[in-house]
Each structure stands twice: as C-alpha cells, then as structure tokens.
Length: 254
Ligand SMILES: NC(=O)c1ccc[n+]([C@@H]2O[C@H](COP(=O)([O-])OP(=O)(O)OC[C@H]3O[C@@H](n4cnc5c(N)ncnc54)[C@H](OP(=O)(O)O)[C@@H]3O)[C@@H](O)[C@H]2O)c1
Image 1 (spheres, protein in one colour):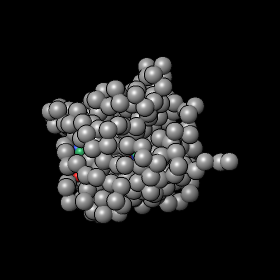
Image 2 (cartoon, helix red, strand yellow; image 1 turned 90 degrees about the vertical axis):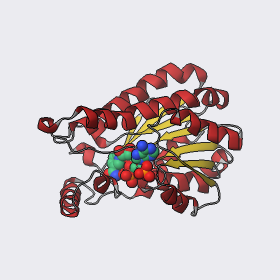
Image 3 (cartoon, helix red, strand yellow; image 1 turned 60 degrees about the horizontal axis):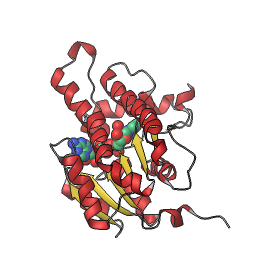
Image 4 (cartoon, protein in one colour; image 1 turned 90 degrees about the horizontal axis):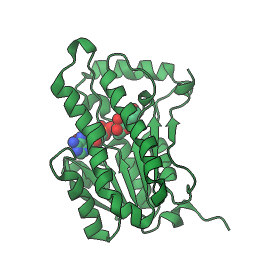
C-alpha cells in the first residue's frame, strides 16, 4: 500500500527559517499540514504569529539568525520543545541589488552572514540531532545560484555558495544517513524585492520583465515552491541527496 507524505512526516520536527513570510511561511504550513511539528523562525514576531495562526502544529521563535549564538539557540529551542530534530530548512535569505561599482564590504558581509554563514551554523548545531534521526537539510537557493545575475552578483554568488555547501555536505554527511538537498526557485511572489529596498515602481518593472522571460508566463506561488521543500525533506526521498532542484516555470531552459 502506498504511504502518503502526510504519514511519513507525522510528528517529525522541522525548523523553517524565514517563516514569517513568502516561501518560508508556505513551507511551515505545508509541513504542519503533513503532520510535522514546526518551529517557525524569523525576526518579526508578529509575522511569525500570523504564520502560526494558520496551523496549531507551528510554534514560533523570533530570532535574528545572524546573531551571536542564535543558530544554536534556534536548534536548542526545537529540541527542548519536542525532544528531537528531523529537518532543517534554511530558507531565510535576502537579495541585495549591488552593481560592482557600488560593491561595499559591509553589505557583502551582511549578505553572506545571512545567506551562507547562518545556514552553515544552523546545520552545525542541528548535526547531532539529524544524525540521531537520519534527518535531512533543505537549503533554499535560487535559479541565480547557478545562473549569472548582473547587478546583483553577490546575491548570485551567495546562492552558488549555498549550492556548493549542499553538494559537499551531502557527501560529508552521507555516511551518517543525513540527506542534504537544495531547492532553486525561480521568480516567486514574495516580499523579497521590496525587502531589498527597491521602490514599488522598480519592483513592478522587475516582476513584469521576469514574467515575460518565464516560459510558463507567470511568476511562481509560494505554495508551488513549498510543496517541493516538503518532498525533498520527506523521509520517502531516501535515495536523493546532493541535488539542486530547480522549480521555475521553465526559466532554466531559456
Ligand atoms: N521570491 C523569489 O522570487 C525567490 C526566488 C529564488 C529564491 N528565493 C529565496 O527564497 C528564500 C525565501 O525568500 P522569499 O521570497 O520568501 O522572501 P521573503 O518573504 O523576504 O522571506 C525572507 C524571510 O527571511 C527572514 N529573514 C531575513 N533576515 C533574517 C534574519 N537575519 N534572521 C531571521 N530571519 C530573517 C524574513 O523575516 P524577518 O524580516 O521577519 O526576519 C523573511 O520572512 C530566500 O532565501 C530567497 O533568497 C526567493
């Protein structure tokens, strides 16, 4: 008899960073609907509470994951609450529009602290628990983790780093039964562009240009991305590790 993903994720413990909006919120809800206990992490407590209002299986932890000691505190919070940790979803991330002529050490450092260092330290803190339960890590990259992005090269570079961490950790952790995969979404509706500080008119222009380039002629929804985060984390995906799954309406082919 086929077993549905719902049964396999029942009572598993999942951390989702950046769960107060966009892809992270949809991911937290998707895991909770599949029966998992979810710790939703992000800086804005009110945004996290809105996520948690969508399902009783979601608990919140307001935290800046780039803060000193924060990655360990996030993992400790999940383990103290539920006694185990099965899945780490490194979703929190940011975009920085920064042509080379404007390259700035502080901005580069901040971007890599969030997109590369924090996921690394979260994964390190999660390691003993993932080993104990033969768990999984899902890193959220971007189609620009393996495509050039003029004008935002450091964002692309930070996601390329995350993809290489994914492949390297997959090999490093395979002997312990831990699977490590990444999802590379194409342009998806979210607050990311606005969060990058771009004016509304510019955000709208970027969205229209992206839509025109996507073969399926629309940007993705959070749910269309979240469903694949859950699939990669699903214990049934037992023989998939080190993969970067692109979910982008066909953009990769253009
Ligand atoms: N939307 C797209 O088109 C797209 C495409 C490819 C890849 N992605 C990737 O998908 C992921 C999710 O992005 P999204 O589109 O859903 O954008 P989003 O709505 O801006 O989500 C990013 C989340 O990260 C959280 N966050 C930011 N800095 C943080 C910090 N220091 N500590 C803890 N949480 C932090 C934010 O919450 P707080 O501000 O409350 O902390 C926010 O909820 C990102 O890694 C992004 O690069 C997005």
